[in-house]
Image (cartoon, rainbow over all chains, first blue to last red; front, side, top):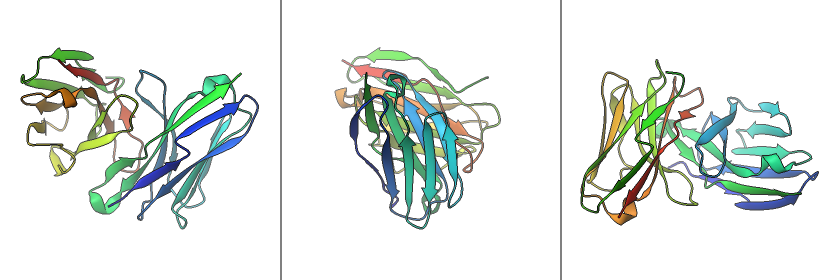
Length: 112
Length: 113
């Protein structure tokens, strides 16, 4: 079974600082996704990573994928308060009928 | 439609009643997912449809839960004899296929009293 683990589960950081959220997955997957969820809202797609070495950037967020290490990272550069949200990674479990499996989420709080 | 549409957005029901939750995916999307999110928790996978068939029903918590999809489009999640532990936000997502991201609806907040 595919298991997706994120760490940290909670991150409190100062504005202007950098940090990385890690997403490990347990079995082969060739599709990795990052989502953002604001309180009381649904999930918003941030990045789709489709191949080993893929790197995507949007504003202060950059996501990467290492399929050999079964690791994806979401790097936050010079955090601002508006980035406060819960961030989820998810991977496709190919041998499990293409089920989309989510990590537990990382709650990010950026303090002014 | 422009996005994934779920109805109702909120549902309060009495314990023991049956409820139906509806998901209208983005037109042309063949994959459809149902998830459950309890307060402050992550996403619990319930069921996945490819077209009208569900390759994996293992996520359904009990036999009180069932789901169907007709015409490769609208899906209905039915919960029979609701219990208080069924209270959660039920999220639906659709995608073109497994290589593209899944787009989520706004969810149905179910409260069982």
